[in-house]
Amino acid sequence: MQLQTFENATVVKQTGSLYRLTFLPGWEPFTAILSGRLRLRGSKLTNPVTVGDQVSGHWQPGEYNQQRKAVITDIHPRKNYLIRKAANWSRQAHVIAANLDWAYVVVSATEPQTPFQFIDRFLVTCQAYSVPAAIVLNKTDELEWAEGYDQSAFHLKDVYTRAGYQILEVSGKTGAGMDAFAEKLKGKISLLSGISGVGKSTLVNALDPSLQLKTAPISHAHLTGKHTTTFYEMHPLRTGGFIIDSPGIKGFGLLDMTKEEISHYFPEIFALSPGCRFNGCLHAEEPDCAVKEAVEKGKISEERYYSYLRLLEDPEGGKYRT
Image 1 (tube, helix red, strand yellow):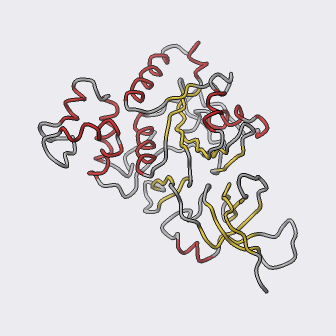
Image 2 (cartoon, rainbow, N blue to C red):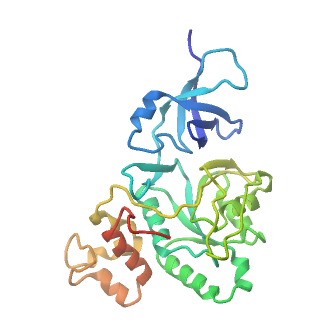
Image 3 (cartoon, rainbow, N blue to C red):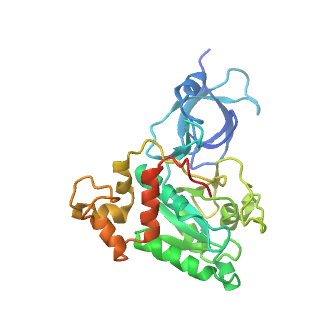
């Protein structure tokens, strides 16, 4: 019996051993499983196939019905992807998403506060794997009454604007800035990432209320968020484009990156590296370092520089916690 095959389906969700696929830009998801050959190929990964992957395969033999599953047999080459160390005690890696047009790290203007080191690890990974990245500053409406946070929000904007990153100021609650954000997402596949409680699902609901993603308030006792998104999942937006909502994560361990490479993914540090006395300068202990001089003069923020030094010390994130 000749199998009925399919080509160029996009993975939009994974739950355990089951996948949901659709043929973009259409949206008629169907269920698939992974062939054993692909499971073996990805033995060093927690997930050999990820959301955003384009795949091919065939339908399981038998009469067509709503329960019949497809079988994924091939993954098409990725134009890019994001990957992180799976866990501090694991040698495996987790592919977050693939074939992205943009990745956004969502941070809160108030609580919970996202450590600079988390933001920098995310941005470095995007830079390393050719994913355009920007920062979304959410909960800007809370600055009107949350005392003391306006200065920290201003400082965060200053640090990353000087580093060359775009910052989108929005409020998923009031809708401020959401029209401009929706315009950037139109016609693209974008990822939202960040720690728990910064309002990723609230932002997606603000972009498209029909999605009705589950949300939860942060814990005021510990100023941390609750995990409301369990799996990476792509959603179509009524304003155009597709967005991948992600579970809140605590750390972002870098994978297979040498110390010599890390400075390449800090744009403002890399730009000044040719002015250092020594080729291959790590900008740590070396004399006549143009980067250290720029930090002393305030041309490079201390927060970004200290994040860089911590990455030199511990790129895999074993010592990092939020």
